[in-house]
Image (cartoon, rainbow, N blue to C red; front, side, top):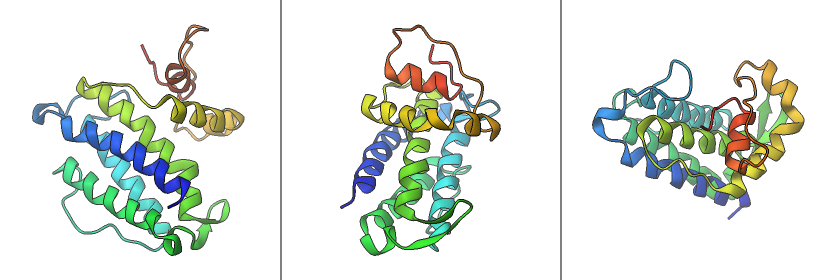
Length: 183
């Protein structure tokens, strides 16, 4: 089993815990992502998972869309991704990306794990759940993103940095870096 498979398993488990704990009446709560509800956060993570798998020639299994059943859609997407990452032949097969040849393992390790991690916080914040993230994952994500600061901002997918106190913990610093207000 690869490091990426294990990292994905850990962050996906934390996201799954939050998805399963969303009260039925909280799916339409506003999230920290402007214009998105809790349901939209899950839809984004499911869609992103399908995108990564699709680049590797894998289709998400059929099932209800996140708009209808966010929990079921996430379980389906998570299972497909974990299965792909757990298969060395599938995880290491190369395909074309906008940045050149890569593997599913590489793209999920570079982008997918962090996406699930950050959106775990978004979903927790939207639905009043525990917002605590793995500090080691937060540190690794922040370390990997800091050299790409200008590129990330120019993508339009990250807001301006948020100021946090100098003694802020690693989770708050990571969230502030990507434009989330951890307070």
